[in-house]
Image 1: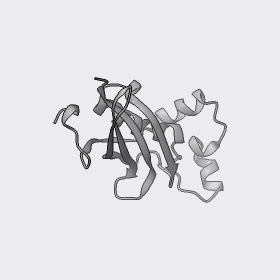
Image 2 (image 1 turned 30 degrees about the horizontal axis):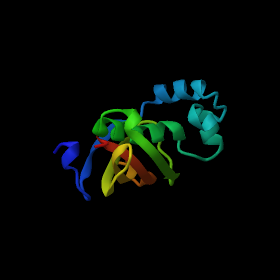
Image 3 (image 1 turned 135 degrees about the vertical axis):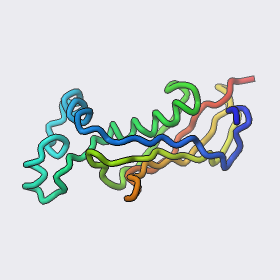
Length: 140
């Protein structure tokens, strides 16, 4: 199905990946994130948490944005993005970004699909949920 043929109820091709702990360390450094739950197993143990580090929120949001961008043809096509954090994603988790088109609207920029989106830990729970508006067609 091409983007021009998208209808309400269409599922966006899912994105699955395993969360890489080395990328998490790099992201913590890039974000200057001092929270040790993202990289220090001893700090996690002291807090009584799982020994696997917790993924940063911006990385989790990025998985959803990547799914949308691959579907629509580029990151610039994601024109609005709103999510709510509902749970943690841990190093080594298999996550799945999913979405479904809930509305279509013709705007001055072009055809926009409003989508319900979720990031779930496979075999676990939803970590993020929200909505996004994605430009899927050019203005007439």
